[in-house]
Image 1 (cartoon, one colour):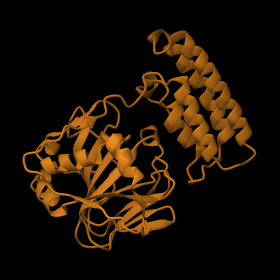
Image 2 (cartoon, rainbow, N blue to C red; image 1 turned 135 degrees about the horizontal axis):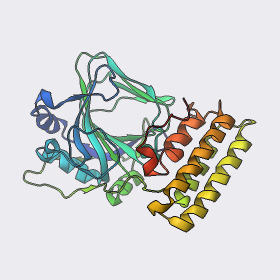
Image 3 (cartoon, rainbow, N blue to C red; image 1 turned 60 degrees about the horizontal axis):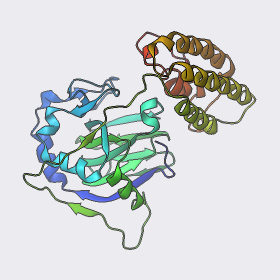
Length: 321
């Protein structure tokens, strides 16, 4: 999710030693390498599709894995933050390793915030987001702007382990956000509230069950299109892109009015996307967003690859390839 500032710290703090005791009690064999094979990056899944600890999917009903269910304080942390939880993992970054510079631009990240609670870390571990950088100390609670280019560097010998939890928000979350402070800013009287472990308490958590459309509504399509056009760098190709996308949205609404999610309409939805994608590819080559990402990559990830679930199940060439 795009934020107004690179980093925000919640007024919450947790017992990092208690969290580490739960985490380190889980066997090493349960940790999995990064799905993209990034050196020094590994993860242990806590919430994932169907509660399957082997799944790296971000779409489908999210449920707790056995690893989370054996960690009551981790569950209390999630309960204190107060979100509806999507994919959630323990993320480990080995010593002398890094998370490479990147931007989270796919559909899943348009409306989700990534919460970080450091569990094992060192003062020299640095998190970079846009032009800002900071160290997230053990037990603190942070969110950051995933729409900016960001990376993490661990120049120490010991690994860094964070709880990394994805959420669309929730009543408790938005209340915490209202009291959050931007990274590096001193606010008189601002202090994080300590949340200690509560023996025997297992909070009821909310988990995502619906997180991707069967057929995208025209209202959602327009929202993504308007957002991405607003993020695009100005240039001579942009008016043409606007016209193509306006025509797509209007024709999509006409089909939606006729079919909604009915499978009988899927061939016509698919044909409209198959007609529009080459037009976008021809018009939008070289157009960038302000965060440096190609416009075609973003519109593909957020709209044309996601507007019809049936389309996502068949091999297609990425628009930006």
